[in-house]
Length: 204
View 1 (cartoon, rainbow, N blue to C red):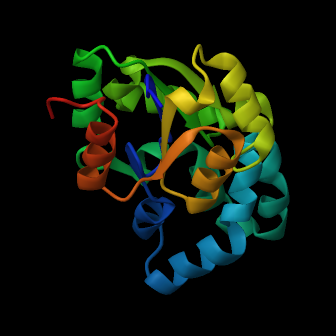
View 2 (view 1 turned 180 degrees about the vertical axis):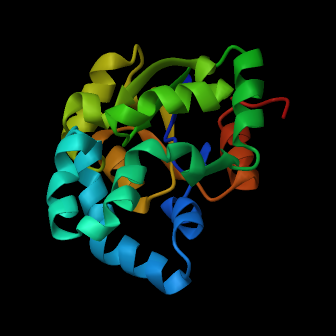
């Protein structure tokens, strides 16, 4: 099997993303942060943004239910810069090395439409992506099979020729089930090992 291209997840593979990072600055105690992220702006709630539901629409019921938290709820959209802290160590450098070697790179990300511009602005490595499949634009998220069908149709490679990295095992398994070569992202060392083992990375 010949590997010809790399497909990247973005969150916590390239982008060091944690909503907690923002809300620790907005609330006084860790208990307040815990409550907000587990009971108000939850990851299940956020998943609807990844599916394409506009943040302005999705936050209205929360604001009605928690009017004293309106500013914090609105900050979920406007505070993206405060949720991120640069790149995950080693990934951007690896993307640069692959680009120098002419390896085609693409991205498949669960991402709200509102955050596409900030990601492109804050992360220069996005310039290496020949195409980016954004869940919010497609109305479907990983690990649902449909998004892998869309990705396969967009990429000029057979799925088995594409190595996909994601930090969630469910997404990796779904990609494998569809036919992609996929690896769970656990850090720079295993990343480079996986790429080198497939002959894609000869110089780190």
